Image 1 (tube, rainbow, N blue to C red):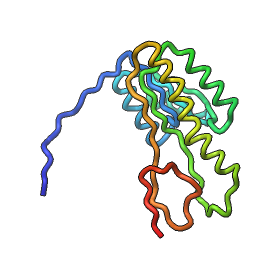
Image 2 (cartoon, rainbow, N blue to C red):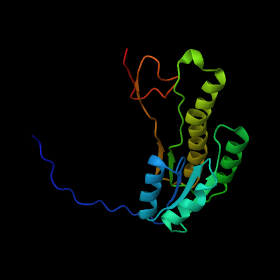
Image 3 (cartoon, rainbow, N blue to C red):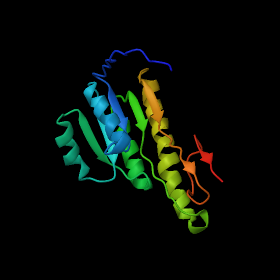
Image 4 (cartoon, one colour):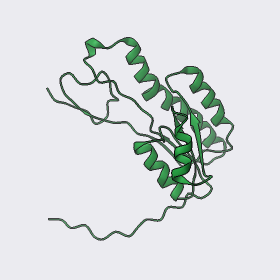
Length: 171
């Protein structure tokens, strides 16, 4: 049995840093947002539900958070958000966390289902990384570009499409 040594708490200081977290209103994105705020960062989060704004401001009780309603399946909404992020002086950290899945037999799905998944899970992260990278290069700064791709254990009839990382087909 291997025993791990007691580890000291790691203090991370993100004071003065600007982080963008997509899908930051719940789950992993919300947890990442909380840690970034705790570390002193100004955090821009996205979500599709406008009412999440008030709840998050109550929970985090800080002025270091900005909420943007974005629907990454909609080209106009995505383009407007990308235009908005180009107006920031800098973005130091990008976490592409927003994502969806459609669980059904592939014979019951449509091309529209496939396009929806690709728009949200692949196209939006690509566009955001491209634009934020330009900003980071221009100011010779920036810290991290992170895309959270999820993997699932697939059963014979479970998933239409999921990004191909960490998947394991169970026949």
